[in-house]
Amino acid sequence: MARMHARKKGSSSSRRPFLTENPKWVPLNKAEIEDIIVKLATEGNSSAMIGLILRDQYGVPNVKLAIGKGITDLMEEKKVSQKLPEDISALLKKVTNLDQYLKQNPRDIHNKRNLHLLEAKIRRLERYYKKKGVIPESWKYSLDRAELELSR
View 1 (cartoon, rainbow, N blue to C red):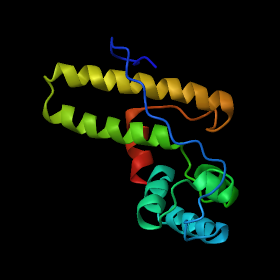
View 2 (cartoon, rainbow, N blue to C red):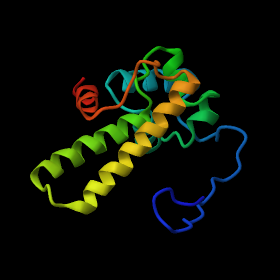
View 3 (cartoon, helix red, strand yellow):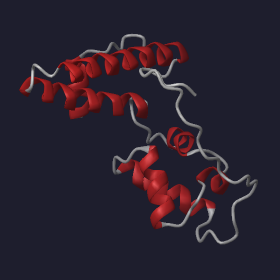
């Protein structure tokens, strides 16, 4: 897939081995994995971080094969999901850090451009999630709102 804000073609990615069932060597059963996911989600971890923790500390290579659904789906089912989607919240964190940097270094024009590109990505995702009904129609991006969302 091509890059969004660069003039390069990008690189192809590797693929997972094709598996249809959970490996026999996984030490945890379905209920234990679900309990761990709920516990980690209530501690404030994102779904990507939960997947990494399950892989590295608990030896679960693929959550979808182990429990039959994704981490985000289970978090929504158990009502422990985050208010904003994970990609928007990561971009909001990036924007606030970059804004703090630009307040100290106002003549850094390259990072000013990066800030504009990040804000464009956020607005594009905002339109998409409003269309899908994931975020409310009244949600609107602004830098002040980004700082407020991250302080919660």
